[in-house]
Length: 276
Length: 76
Image 1 (spheres, rainbow over the protein chains, first blue to last red):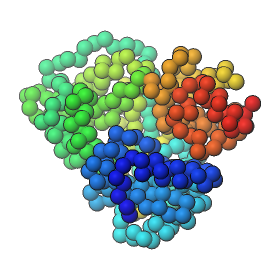
Image 2 (cartoon, chains in turn brown, red):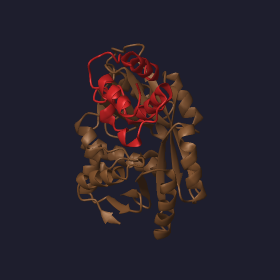
Image 3 (tube, rainbow over the protein chains, first blue to last red):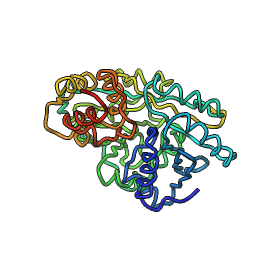
């Protein structure tokens, strides 16, 4: 594996695959600020095979594996060689698309020792109503750095690292600076729940929404989601990814007006494990 | 062709007005995942197969960009 020292290296690798002029198939979406952060923390490496480039994003105990290739048949040969080279590593591959688009590659990966760890489905809520209620309650506040660190710890303690793509502390601190983390706290010190969101033009993304188990059934979750609706009142759609098997969560989101899309994130892992 | 593209975009994301002169990507009307679904619809509607090398967000930022992409991939 070689280390990625600048985004230009990745652009060069993409160009190389394109130059084969045979096709272009990938699970990698170029997000320059995120890549720059990974580079600065030495978290990203790459490996070139025949007609596939693998990008490896290191996590603690496993690696998120991205690929850029000319096609599924070429990819199947290249990943065979790649996996033989690193037999002891745990790789997680996210495949995003509809069921029909992803079934061939899922089958190919299953033949090579990958398991479907879990599936996430995207849900959306289209604005039909405009909330002008200002949810500036005393117990709600934008996280500062200190609270950001508490949020970071809770994400590590309660969220699944394979399925949820947990943010780095540097990303959390950036979101605190951008007022993208709302926390709920009765005593203004201990966080009982939080919500992380993002805004891009007319679309808002609900990234994480969490209430501590000891503080559930107190309407903290609904207070947080209403604050999100207020924050994103000028957008037309709200998006959120949820674990498809989590029926209770899906019912809760449906209650707030979210609807399922035919867009899935299949989380594959080369170890016989299942999301619980 | 423009009207057909606007109709496909509207079917995909009915909440947005694709006749607005804005960058569909920067304005949050389409994201990378929407582009995946859009490619499938365009392939089907125009009987073509858009080259994977062209599936880049910047090629879907306006109706005009999508028209050039379709022409490049053999649609008339």
